[in-house]
Length: 94
Image (tube, rainbow, N blue to C red):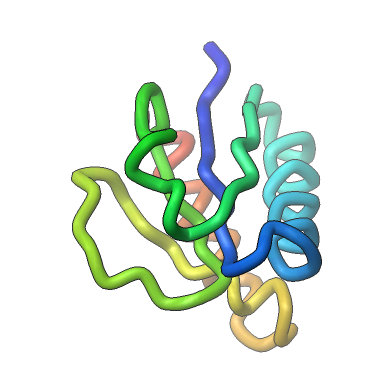
């Protein structure tokens, strides 16, 4: 079953594209069928339907009722393994 992951940033250009590509690569390596919804932070609420995870590349202060795992390590290169493990835990635990 395909899992919907929201990848969000301020402008839907650079950082969310990097994070989205990393999530897709991670899912392919681990046999997870994923659908990426790449949007602006302000569009999260209107795109929540069916989503199991939010990966923002900037701060998200609201609780949307699903896990939020920061995608900043994909941009900075610091803490990537920990972030990937957290994403896999959510996506494989569903």
